[in-house]
Image (cartoon, rainbow over all chains, first blue to last red):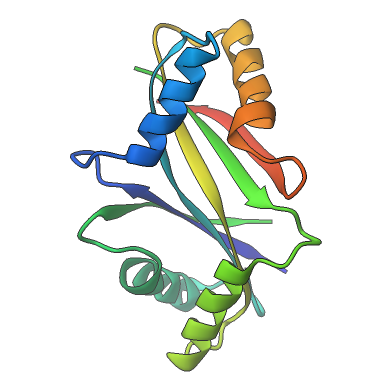
Length: 82
Length: 82
């Protein structure tokens, strides 16, 4: 069955304490290649039936209204896989 | 600066209570197109300097050792963007 992936990230202008914690952990482990880490969410929606424009439109609405909090997060990707 | 995206999802054989909650919320909202929702994490690592094979290898090691818990999660993607 087709899957639609929705990616949600914290807005760029907001602090991301979880990402800062991971960046600090990497620095303590001696990994120096990275200047920043940000952590967001990845939703995989399994679709019943074929993916058409109506389903994609519905997913975009859900992504904006249900899957993300538009005050602090941006939907950075909606794509069909498989 | 280049960014490497690491996607981590709960293993397929595990329950995902957060995803189940979202699937239930969508059903209550009258959205019937989806048979399942699973929720994972998306890490964006900002790289200092160019991305070469050594950096990618390092990211794969970090993804397996630090960014995911291999008992309950799988790393489903490591890709360079920008």
